Image (cartoon, rainbow, N blue to C red):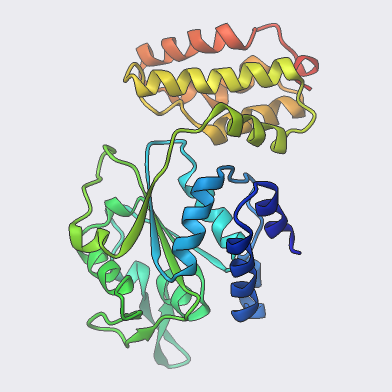
Length: 305
């Protein structure tokens, strides 16, 4: 059994679902030229119930929308699902400038003729990939029209100005979204109806410890307690609206530990990975005080690893 499916077994995911994922992988082999788009995520996703819901949705042919606050693991889950299903991954990050040509493609002049340079959505549709629509609620009108066509139940993209594109039977799209960020808006009902939706829970202490141990198996128990406690403190403060979510950064926390492993002072590492992401001076003071209660300034690498 492949490594990715063994990971599901270790989390005690339903054997019925694992068998169906294995059958899916065998039914839809990946072309050699896009195999480089299949890669093992650096951060594994832990959470049996969420994994089972997501796997069931994708297996029965639905697209998936992951909603929730920052640092709940939406993008990590999307990356892990593409890897588990053995599909090439295409990431599309929405912003105010994303338009239909960014998604489907643009005309270019090559070999004395006009040719379409295919965009991520086009390639994903052709190759049976998993397309990840990051911050989908930042999509403006032009991009939203492409989304409506892409996610249509008829599984074909029919947008004026382009040839009709039929979706490969293995193609799935996974949207992620945060509420309340600048530039975001609520998705309309017609677009939401094209997804099954999972509301992502806050990261639990148990799963956070698993992530830290997976990334840094040599971490000492006291250091694990300190870094885990810091993240959970930040999560609680953000939930209570005492600070913004800028400093609540799982990748920043793991990056700090990586810098410590290289040899940087732990307190300085956390300043780069966590504290300095709070740009407001008053918020930075709050975060700095929280860091000092968990990570002593005189700690060295030997206190952590």
